Length: 454
Image 1: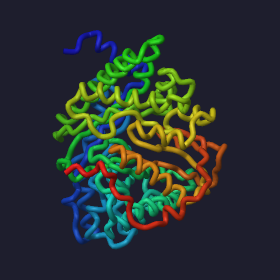
Image 2: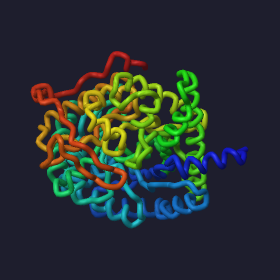
Image 3: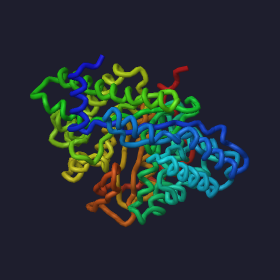
Image 4: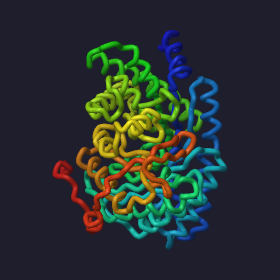
């Protein structure tokens, strides 16, 4: 039973500490929409998404109203489109047509984003996969709500370096195609290793083939709540620190569990997972970097940062797992630069570099996220950054990702403003030394020895 003290405590989290349900995401299986005729594929896709998700936004808003819990985004994730369009699409332009259809139906049902313009190429690329990948720059430049993700590696298969090389070129091409809006297309494109099937967060969300026909996944976020709880401690030891984070994560997850079960009941769609991720926003105080400062660091990036982040990530997961039997997705702490004012401050103070962020990704939930770099960065350098991050994921058996934005026309010392939840970011310097000979080698990096567990 929930007592009156817990009700008041949750209200305080919502009103003063930026607690919110970041997203309700409905996953929809589109495999039965496949056809040899492109027009029929587009029609099937539109019909199925609209039939399942027509009440998603209204349901989210009514739950938020009735329970007083902010639900920031309502989203849809779908089966990777390279699978759905394989029989009908014979050119990148064919895939762009599907992207426009997806954008139209996303606008029609009112969701913020639709994820799943995706391909899984961790061991090799089919012709369909390659066509979809080559369509990404045009697709993201002609749509507003579509998010794209490509999985280029896994612990079981290794890293597909042909795909890594291609994705460096695609990120650069997407930046060029959307340079009129500060290369915003790259903010909707992520390259992953060990991508989960049930992630509700964009841009990496897709509805995995292991999932049911439709599912409700909820992403909860509360870095402000954790920060506030830690600020109440004075000179506490690590045991007290860990217990406080764990208990706070438990409370946050229970809010998500309530919303998930209620959304599942009202929509008639099974509940999938709760993703308890401390995903920051540009709002002051809603920052993972500020949590690290509350733990005892002058700035994110100071010596001890990776250890503090490891502690935070682990305790968040421990608290969440106690609160729900179905914790999944990416659960843990996110460290995007543009979406976290504390991270932005650390970059501007000179405390945080891409290399330090890469070290932090070894122990956080995702990877190099929402990082703006100079627009003249070579595609091979972007591919090298992707390869490094994929290697961290592959060897450590965790999900890693790169969402990097080469802002055309801007260089180190300048800033870019993406608006809304995407925030603003300083342009960060990248290593100038060349890696093109390495990137241009064909084939794949084999899976690590500890992947053999059959």
